[in-house]
Image 1 (tube, one colour):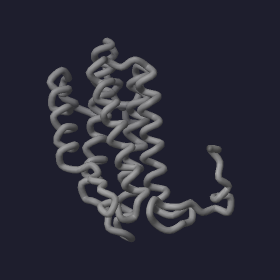
Image 2 (cartoon, one colour):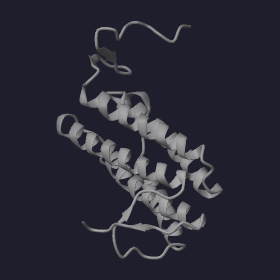
Image 3 (cartoon, rainbow, N blue to C red):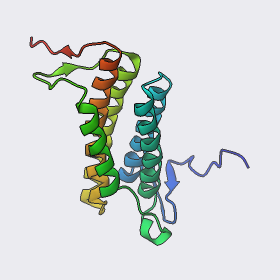
Image 4 (cartoon, helix red, strand yellow):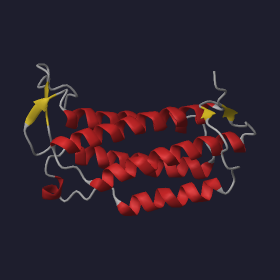
Length: 180
């Protein structure tokens, strides 16, 4: 089977079990950004984060793939897709709480950076926030699971804490933002 189909050459693409839509449709933008986030997490993992962080990121990558599949499907329940929701968000919250026990509380804003893994975690956080904004925008046009939006909100928090944790474990202090 060839990887190229030529069916999208005119600027549209097919949704799973649904119609063809333009490639700049909000649904395509949303799942494309979730895919981009997944790819950035793959880059993070090539920079050897601590084993517990890496294992969590692998799980998140699988959850993001599930989320992308749901976003690519106009009627996911029709195909038995359950998606991401309360259970996955609770798992992210538990990881945030656990990781924060190793960190000093923040007293000011910090700049992204430090180790390569931490810097890419900060990049992943910004892509995650964009994906969340795109889901919110899509939700104004078509109903999207509130659980998916909450999941991305929690995930961006986790990625921020994970970046700080990776730097902390590597002996790199947070870099405070200096105004002006």
